[in-house]
Image (cartoon, rainbow, N blue to C red; front, top):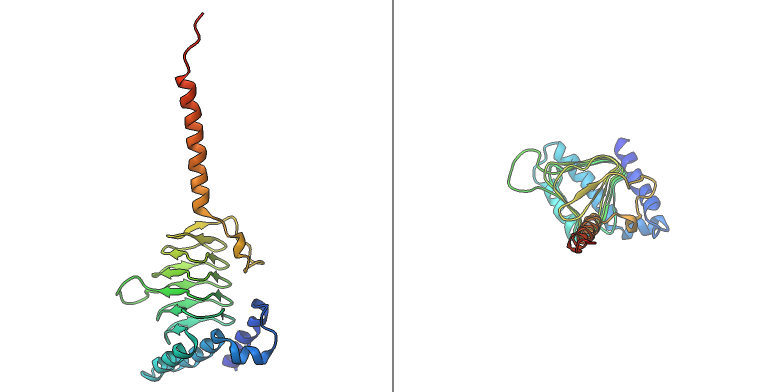
Length: 217
């Protein structure tokens, strides 16, 4: 019963997150992210019951048909939506919280050949933009956002946004009610450059004042 409820929530969340989803037949037949999640549910169940070969085979077949690679050992919460899906990679020890939204090209990977917990732990209601790489045994807090194309190597607190290469945390702009507004992502690098330009202008003004000849009577 629990498995059925989880799959039903995986299916329902697509209509909430994707305005292009118009009917159930379209979702069942044409959404590779949903197909990958369904296959992973089965592979993960076999993996937790100590079945050795078939979970990896299911994962391999799912990758062939969907372009999404999820290791059977990864823990995926309910209501997780992989939008478009192509190029998504989720490692063995990754944990993805409930109602997380993952766009195409995302990697939840490791940083080397270390053993044990080596992949990210992603909280609930997180949005990970297209092409983002979240690497290592780090924690992404609830309702956090990862900007498209970012490379995140450090923890991201809850309700914060990480953008850039490497990712920088900005904790005053995220709101949980607009998870798809990528156009409102802050530009951390532009902010830093603007600050430097303003500082240079101030220094130039001070230098000009110092270079002016002193007034003599």
